[in-house]
Image (cartoon, rainbow, N blue to C red):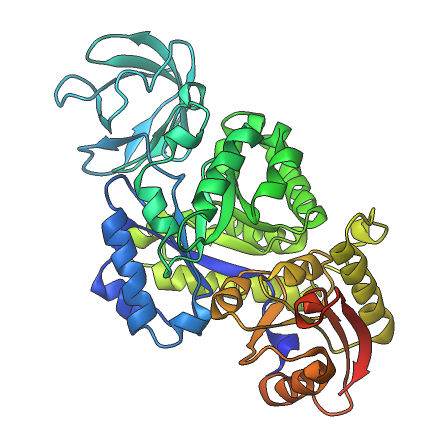
Length: 472
């Protein structure tokens, strides 16, 4: 295995529950798919969880190598129906929208009528491709004026940020707790939160379930951005919804804000996933736009752990082609440009915990000794997350007894997992790890590596950790 030629940034293939069928199941190959994101629509959780179980049972290697993320946050508030094809909407055009066929120019399907709209507030159609402003509200229709023209397609989503209510414990659907107790689910994506107290309540209830996946939080509002320092410590990472952010602020600010969020995730040793219409045009087109390909490369350069392909692609004919192209774009960005160097924003970190002290020293040692890898012994994956946050090209090998942890770490940048059958005692840990490295990694005899562990306190009567530079 040549880790130097393996991608560090991962691709998450997205589908909504309408796409979960035998054809999709048969197409899954753990050698081509890094992870799956399934958008759970209202009332579809039983179908989603059953499909997750079938993946782990029927797809070869899925139990070890295919993490699954369930998105609880991306429920569509409204969608345009009864369109037979693309429809052009022009600047200054007045359009009547109604939930009743025959009552308007566009028919909307929504459970939030009429509360979805607010007078004089913006409405976004088709992932923000068309922008309108509400002029009047009636019992059976609203009239909007197009302020940014464009083309919408059948089933175009309708979004109105001004009427979104803050998420809290009560707003989490009851079916979400079933997902939190399902062993086939690796990640749960929570809605964008504004109140750390409410997020803590949700996290505690999730963790009280018999089986708790890793929790990620969507970042899709200015209020979430304002409290990100208080919210990040409560979750494993975030998914950045750039479209939602662009609907609430100047779109020109979103690229820099995305970079800042990724850097903040690194500062807190959290995962960062970049989303929103990645290669979205490939639902209809065999090739993406140049801007879409650059979008993926920029996420690599920014240091994201993964990019999320648009779930709309799953409704088109080019889903597998889009996945393949995204992988090639990442490989070109990482191998041609050399990828990101060590995250020297963290080169002088404020050391406040033992794990920060150990992992910071380990990275410096690996950098100075030109180590082939950093090897960490980890129970929950936390040590690997901290090591990954430094952004060095030195690969990380996470040795753990948990198959779940290995599978979840597949989404963490630059981390490769090895399963440990039996937890060794302190006296024998070095010999056992060396044997594993020789048989299950690319490291060869006489190669130098850095070994680090902050979990060995459970092996002895007293708390301890290990950090050393070793030659295999």
